[in-house]
Image (cartoon, rainbow, N blue to C red):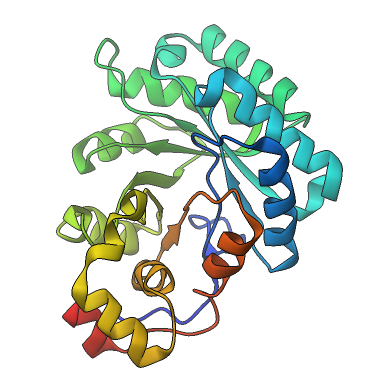
Length: 267
C-alpha cells in the first residue's frame, strides 16, 4: 500500500510547481452564472486548479474559464485544457487548435495542455511530438495526456526531446480503482501527476455503505470521504465538477485532513 500523502498541495510532475489537491472540472455545466459564483468561492477556499477542454459545450466551458480569469485574475488559477486527439496529427493543426483554445480562455499561455485521449489514426510518438510543439511555441507551460494506458504513456514520453509529460488525467474513484495496479505506482515512481476525473461517479459513490459508515466516524460527508480517499494517494489530484456554492464548500471540506490507513484499506 502506498503511504498516505498529507499534503493539500500536489506537485505537477517534477516541475517544482504545486496546485490544490482538489481541482474543479467544467464538463456539462448547466448554469454558468451560478457556476461562476461557485468557482469564485472555490478559489477563496484555496482551490486554484481548473480543468476544461475544447470539446466541453463546444468551447463554452473554456469561455467560462475565461470569464473566471477576468473575475479573479490570471495569477490565481492553474488552468488545464484538453485538445481533441485529431488535432495532434500534425504540428500545424495542434498549434492552431491551441491558439483557438487560448483565445476562448482569454490567456496568452495555458498552464497545461493535454491530448484528450489517444488518436487511433496516428502513431502515439507523432502525437507526443506535436504536443511538445505547443510548449516549444510558448502556448503552454507544461504538457500532458488524458486516458492514456501505461504503454501509451511510456511510448509518448520516449518520443519527447525537451519536455516531459507531467500529467495523465484518467478515471479514478473508489468504485473504479484500476489504475492502482500499474498506472499509479508508475506515476509515483516517475514523478507524474494523476488527475482523477469523475471521482464521485456522478453521485454513485453515495450508495456505498462503507463510505457512509466511515464518513460518520470522521464527522464528514460521503462526498468528502470519497475525495479524501483519492487525495490521500501520492501524486493524485481529484477534479470533481460543482455548480453550486454549497457543493463547492462540501468539496473543499475534503481538504485539511486525511483518512487513516485502516479506513483506506476498508474502502
